[in-house]
Image (cartoon, rainbow, N blue to C red; front, side, top):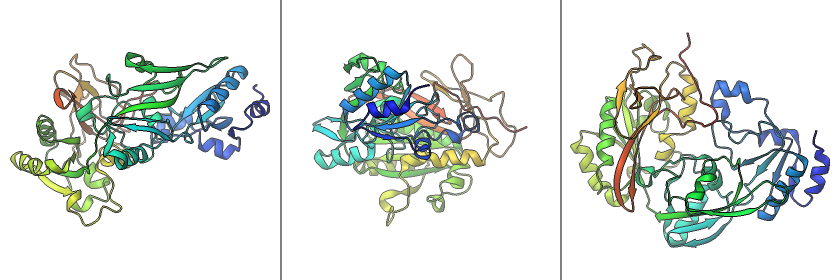
Length: 415
């Protein structure tokens, strides 16, 4: 049993919290959206929370933890849904939220600490030189850049830039290892894939260098269709319009939009599926003309409302905690997810609910085997990757949630 009093003494000068209530609070993420994970992880808690202010304090913490055989779980803002930030074996939660400074901003890139909240990072780079991150998660208002790199895979902006682990979407990471004498590594190129999406299990990120893109006052638009597959076809066609600059295209099946997008509900008819789109202001006229040609109904435009106060961003609708909360209310449906790089095969799932209340096809991969079920909402995210400003190959993913390398949320219709 580790001597935590001695550990606290050896960490003198570094912020350490051992109040059980506060430690438990910092040992949580949004795992409880899954009833399976809630039952498995409800009792998980750390023994200490350590909050370093700089890299030197990270090194000292890891050195002490190694000497005492204490596990360390890094934490950003805890916005994940699968228990990634939870200390399964107790020990120390390394809270990196205090390392939140931007060090340098240059044309096309930013250097910062891992604990800065993504929305704040974008705000500062935009004020400095009209730039923003290429993409961000739907939890950008609370998620940290280090947590996004360690646990994310893409997000808003992937329609243009691809996945987070695609070469060039991270420039450099500074990482500290947990050893008797911790090493500080600067990783670039292909070496970045060793720690990207590794949840901090093989090193603690202490500095980030990320590429930037021109910032726009993106216009949120909801386009309505009576049939979900019409919305998917529209999204696919829009993604092929290279002249229209967009940051997000996300078809969302009925009944979720009308039932759960409470702030947008007055704009959405019951039974409508919607496509959430983020459009650059200079592309809005071309976008409107294209949408009319596709017989889409523009239900909502953020540049046409008197005030956006209290109305969530479009990217928060595309995949956010509101949608996840909806899943807890509607435990009827099981959907499958898969990434289809070459072709789409629409088949009915063997576990498909025969209820006529909602009919949304499952996507199967090209080998004919189904991907793991991960949630009960149906979200379609159209992702195309391009080099520079030229969009090229595309893939369509119709997903219910981000899959976890640790745990799949398996939810079936109640018998």
